[in-house]
Length: 347
Image 1 (cartoon, rainbow, N blue to C red):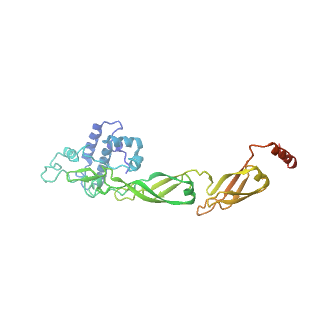
Image 2: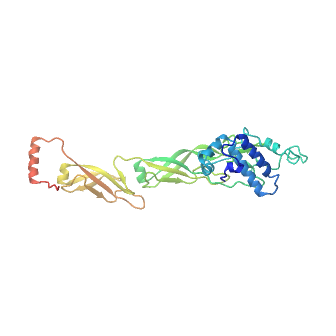
Image 3: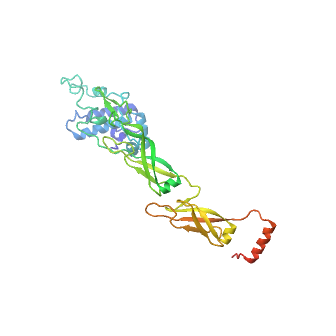
């Protein structure tokens, strides 16, 4: 449920705590289930009023609602755990407030019927934080998703791997069964184990399978490893956002192709020959034709990334290196070479 607490209580955003409390008292007195027996709409309205007051009477919840907005507050507020009612004993006592509401024989704890306060309970064992509202059961809600960054080496990303991760994972509090509250016979109080959050954090070891060929920025979804659900709902998912570290040799080109730069001496470029180049599966031999130009590219078919669906190629760009020191004898030979093998330049 993503109600607007201000509209529900009929107050403005700048309303004082006393105004909020007064509005709640007036409306709660009108829609209380014991005042409206067997009226489902009144039960629903009373539930909404109680939730609205729980939010607006708590400065932290009120601030988070104002900052996040309605949808985000209920679904992803409180660090992704979503909104959970928190009727803590330090805020107000339900016994006191309802004794004040219904100070007549029908609802007073000293009534002639002998029942304590009203037949409506905020703390039943199976009704969650709000009780069962005369038969109302809270709907099971799936937990929110989590996102974490996962840094992979270049080789782990292109070859695929399986990683064992140790993460702080939220799980449903076993003491309150995820309700965030417990009943001690005198009323509803925050669960001492989870402090009203409904979940606790524990260190867990999980395995993540990295598919071959995954790219920087892609996600690995681990189902059921997100935030716990509410009222028996399924947990959310954990999304690992992949960050691939750069490789000193290879650069990714598209989905499955790779490229690298290989230095080549002037003489190998002029005369041709064979050079050794690295690949993902080990060294390979590349044949260089005579007269190879600086920046020329060669393709090694099938030496790129194997994603399981297709295999890419490796493109090698050669960088021709010139001698940095030339003797007088070498200059004479180069002059002869210039005459014998002239280079024609198109302007």
